[in-house]
Length: 287
View 1 (tube, rainbow, N blue to C red):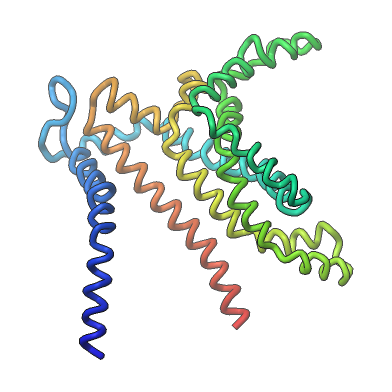
View 2 (tube, helix red, strand yellow):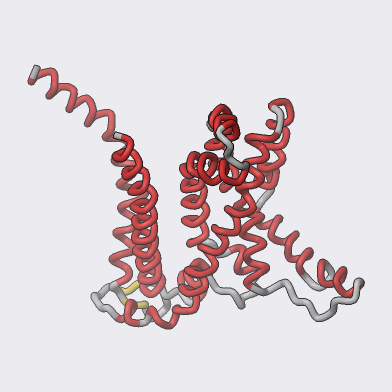
């Protein structure tokens, strides 16, 4: 038995070795490089110069506005995407007949068939001076500015990331046992009460997955704020593009990157603890 167990361990290690090496090279090693860079200094011609200093981290308050915008607009965009995606996912999963469901799902994912850059340019025109503001002026509402505002960035976020929120929620609702809804109705539960006590709790895994996907991607977003924010709504992603590609201050950019990773790790860990903790508590109560 011991020989079999030992051979199984060696077999498992051999099978996991390629994936582990890939993970080490493609994820861990770049993070180590960025961490080392963050303690260095900017070279005279830009880039990285060796050394050990905390100056880059001490200079983080100069990018405080980018951190504030990201930490406010990213959660707001995630919540707004959820509010738009949930009714759509519910309609597709529960109300639409099977023969039309596939067609509507394809329509949801159609925007992903084109580049986000092209779609964002389209919103520049829609929200710009010759778009919606012109229509508002035609009906007598003047002086409305939509482009280069946080609202424009939120519109771009919802449009760009909506499919990533819809599909996890759709999958959770698709697995929902319709008999539970009928049982709740037979027991006198109103549609609203049934939704709160049956549908919403059972769709929480999809909500958690969708929010996680959208929030993590938004934390590194730079294209939507750059185009729809017009340089007035600055995300951490925009700060990193400026530091690495324009000012070529790699150590400071690395320090900002390490700080962003730390914030995301703390936020995601707390989020997972809250969501998984609640699920564990329910499982223990059932036992």
